Length: 242
Image 1: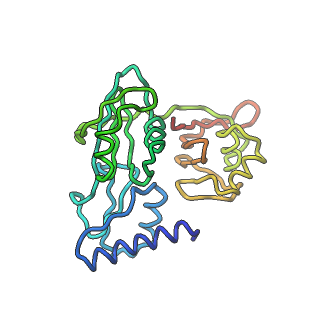
Image 2: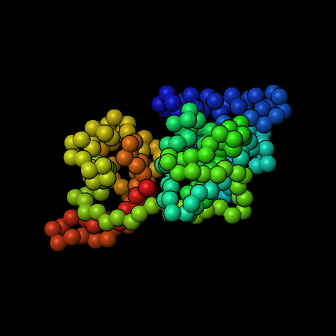
Image 3: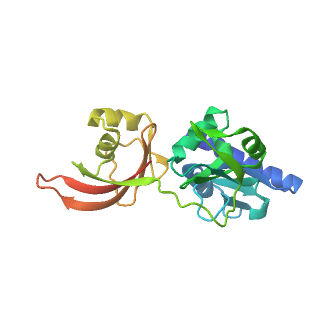
């Protein structure tokens, strides 16, 4: 167990303890997919906790101790703008963090055409409603979102790669456009996660459906194996998050 994971688990136990002592809900996060999975795996099954991100199927979740869904301090905000501007997840996240907003206060960002819904902790919603009118160089209007009508993000592109093998270092080298040696150093430096868990084994084999996230380079999913090229290399379909 690495130090960050141990600290996270300690915070989860603290939330549970305070909730029991004071008979009020306590919350942790928003958590990324690795964090929420880690807490689920290491808390006892009897723990009175619930994970919720504002809507069914959310990726970034808050942990609530002694809470129901209606208790979670989550606000959904709609950012509207001219449809001709192709704003993406990274545009919103970059603009918000540039204003000093902490990542753990922002949940899922669902970017659509002319309308993006962002889930945030209640305490930062007034600031966003009153102070934000630009995302990058694009003017936006911010209001409360109807969570029954959420955008369906078109945030991936389909790619076909040729790999020498399904080893992690080969995949990372292609994704980041690096040599195998540099890709291996990236992996050993704990810059790569596989299915949201940090991996340092460069020869780790990958399977269809595996998600690989490379810090500073993005997130990729090994979607399918497509066969072998004439030169004997593997052809694979990959989804890259934009």
